[in-house]
Length: 622
Image 1: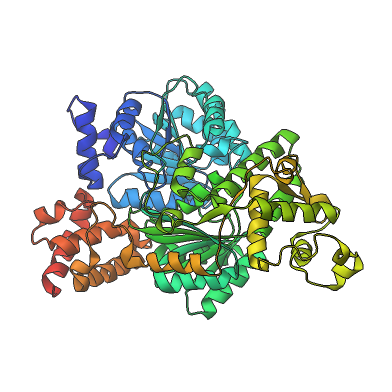
Image 2 (image 1 turned 120 degrees about the vertical axis):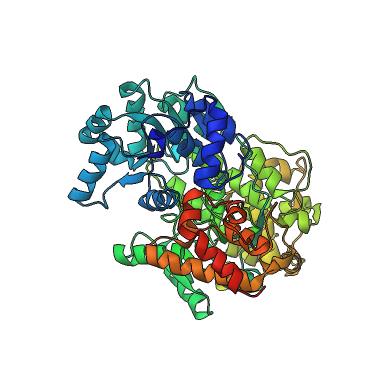
């Protein structure tokens, strides 16, 4: 019998919700606005929920599905997300199933039979499947508790991950007007939120917007020198043996970086759409099921991945927008423990992304929005102020304090100097060389390097030749990149990425516009941040138990969990989350009742694993 069919007769929804939360999921209480959202949906209301990755979005539709009559239908875009969430729900004793392309004809028929028989609490469906006439007719015959539209930003053409099939979900409001709908996303600016509400007929529904802050994530953006070497240093010094995700823009780069990390003794696997489907699936399964795997991927990887113990996310190429950056970095530290979002960034990244926008087939309006989003991300990369404050400000959220204490700029504040003269020298060089050359040639002219190309165009005869010898090539690149970020220069993709003056450059050349530049002494900044960012000095997650409290028991529990996960064919975190293992190791429960008090141990897990866990606690030396 499904949980939703055996309801407590307690009339108060809040009390019933708390009881289900405790008995099914083993959690003592709600977080943030969860209780308010769950009550609203359980009573039949529609809403739009914005909550950061790891903030507990899934509970906002899973629990109301168990409180309401019928089956909750969850629209999810990725098979991996469906599979992992259903596995976790089944472990907790919830009757959950998926309906997607991985099922055989017989398996799909059995899921459909269970739905019509009222034998399901939750059903996960891909949007393409849901919108077929067969599936819509099936849902029309079933008792539906609610519709949850996960990753709702996919419905917006202004979002970072637009999926055309999501637009058809507007049919749900028309065909099922009396069934509550909850749309959820971790990432949406004001424009995207507006479009989500309009397309899903939620304009009159309340919006629950949680804080976008992820205080356990340390944000670091460094000058790209040798990005792979820089990354290897970060992993070796702070994240040896940790699970991580590394994002690259191209498939070829994914392969190269994965190979380089493997050569350095790091267990790294590639993931991109060009790989054989079997290889891709095996690599993803290893990442989900094993400890300490680093996946190197294009953006084809990650959305919906529910692995809670990813300790770092690294970008070796600039994402397209702050939304994409926030979504991707948010895959780190879902368990609330200290984690790192690290990115290596250079001028070539701006040029490459701008060229991709210019060469896209999108409308002029789409290109303008895309350029604005890219400019906002570049401003985040170049800011000398708190990165967290800038990031949250993009989503309309303000912080009470100026320093977050957990980003590179707050930990090692950069020095800023008046850069007006340097800017004038560089802009003059661009102008006098005809606005037809890229960064390398301009720097050659500035530092007085007599290359064949400089001589070919007689640029050694110009007044700007050699006027910038006070800086080296790396420092000039930093100046150039900051001027692009400020909007005084732009890369012209139609002229082989030649740098050209913008309208605002005139004010700089005339001395009317102030230019403050971040100083970047050779190697000093990266060394300073590195020294302050070792794993042991990261801020502890609130309420987290220390694994070091009982290392022998902690290791034994992890080994037991891995064995159980292999036997059951599910990711290790589906059996027990790291935080639950930490709690058991710290408390060393001696009875089933004491074990039941550990967060993450619900009734079914106590029934399945209680005796084994107590035996492990008793027989492992502390």
